[in-house]
Amino acid sequence: MGNTALVTGASSGIGVELAKYHASKGGDVVLVARSEDRLNELKSALESDHGITAIVIASDLARPDAAEKIFAATEAMGLQIDILINNAGFGGHGKFHERDLAKDQAMMQVNMAALVNLTHLYLQGMVSRNSGKILHVASTAAFMPGPLQAVYYATKAFVVSFSQAIAQELEGTNVTSTALCPGTVATGFVAAGDLDGIKAWDNAATPDSVAKCGYNAMLKGDLVKINEIGLSFMANWVVPFIPRKTMLKMSQKFMEKAGKRQ
Ligand SMILES: NC(=O)c1ccc[n+]([C@@H]2O[C@H](COP(=O)([O-])OP(=O)(O)OC[C@H]3O[C@@H](n4cnc5c(N)ncnc54)[C@H](OP(=O)(O)O)[C@@H]3O)[C@@H](O)[C@H]2O)c1
Image 1 (cartoon, helix red, strand yellow):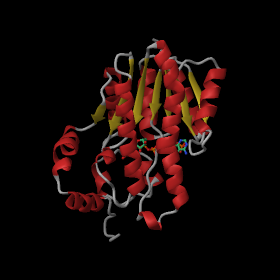
Image 2 (cartoon, rainbow, N blue to C red):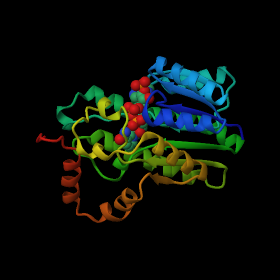
Image 3 (cartoon, rainbow, N blue to C red):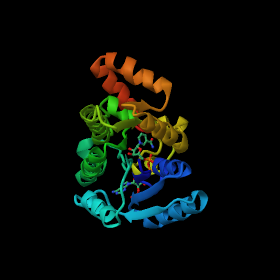
């Protein structure tokens, strides 16, 4: 198998660390995000630190044609994508009816539609070569509804459902689909989603630890990976058994900003 990974959201946070980890193993990378300058800085660092080739594709995944354009660009360069890492995503705080609908629509486009489109385009080649790996960066938000981040949590539930379903369809091939479900991580995600002041991020994991955990789970072909054992226990063995209304109240409390009543 070749070893070129396409990483979306490679300009910040978990995506940067996923690209670094892959490059540290000698793999080439295609770096995708909107912030071209940051992608170019990372390209230079990865090429000089690891002697690999990094390609930058600046793209706004909120645009409906983004995936097709990225695919056309890699095809035009004759690049074979062996690993697809759908990591780009963002959240947004507030009651759904008070939020700017355009922001939630862009969120659905980036977190779900672009991920589905990229997967559809690159998975076909992987299946025909009978070789490939896909990592979807979801969230523990996938395991419950999220009052005050209603659309974000729903997008991540979609990602975990989608990833597992295609993993089953791929059984018997050498192509795998893994959903990484981190708890809170100290990245640009907080500022991008207006999440400052939420206590849950006080003890956030580091992006490099989360990236390594997810990447290694992808190599093993795990179905779903939660980065901390305590969170995994909560998601699988506690949350499903909490009465629904109680769980919704707990979930809302988790997303409340310190000192504010939403
Ligand atoms: N941080 C957390 O607590 C946490 C927890 C669970 C799951 N996650 C998930 O982890 C993934 C990575 O987030 P992060 O924590 O690393 O946050 P981050 O530091 O804010 O990085 C987000 C990345 O997504 C890219 N992105 C956002 N909107 C985009 C768009 N319209 N087009 C192209 N790229 C776009 C950003 O690049 P540009 O701005 O340059 O476009 C950036 O590279 C996300 O899917 C997030 O939902 C995060």
